[in-house]
Amino acid sequence: MPRLPSRRRIGPWKPRTALLALVALAVIGGAAAMALPRDEGPRPVTVAEAQRLAMARFNTYDTGTMRVTVTLHDDSGTTTVRGLADYRAHRAVGRFTVDGAGRPDTGLIAWDAAGLAVSSAPARGADEVAGTTKAVARTSPRSWSPRAYTEDPLDNALRLVMALATDRPDNPQLLAQAGPRRLRDETLRGTAYTLFSGPRPRGSARDSESPLTYWVDEEGRLGRLEARIAPLPGPARVDLTAAPDGLRVPDRPWAAQAAAGTGRR
Image (cartoon, rainbow, N blue to C red; front, side, top):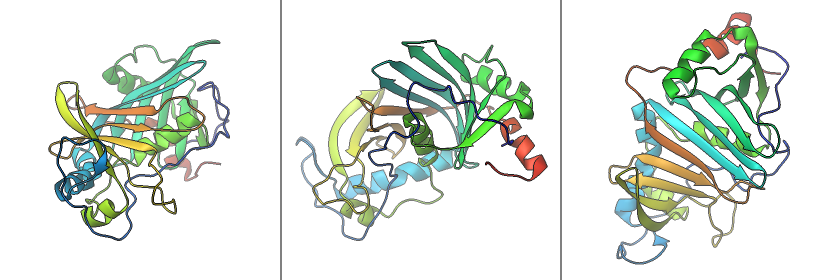
């Protein structure tokens, strides 16, 4: 992305707040858990459940382009990012809104594995994801202000969005040993999902809990992820849904960087 001064007024949080634990499907050695009845409360995953959970990130990658909605609440209001993620290119664009105490804010945002950028261009006509991609495609590359990720909760949530896809399935046996648990079944947007706690963060105690909750359907597709991120009072939420046909993530936010052959500062 272009080297421009960063626009910092994205959310109400201070940039050096701590993340409880940002992990994707981290795996360490071991064997799959024994099968247990489905009508119990939280419990270790079965062999079949470990296999389904191990497919979730690969299925996201295989889908390619998805609509994403990121929602964070704190005591002063709500920050929402609605956009489009290309999980093969590892890029995403969206429109952010900040509501609540203080002055509301809205604008265009782009992010990838390395950081994010906000555009100074107006976000008119960007209420839906199709309008957002059109608005991003119309922006000048020089309107984007990039920066590396900080420990801001929004930054950590956007970074987590980029970690939800991988080009191969995770190893279900190793995954099961890392401590994911089946929590319960719920219906979301008319689809039945099983909720799993994520693997324990690397280096944590065996009785520790993951800060992540995955919503995975019967075919191993991820529909939602919730993450406990300090100092937020409740979990940040990432919703994944099918993208409208033909929509693509515009490359405009990254064009100036490519032309100049430079990276973020």
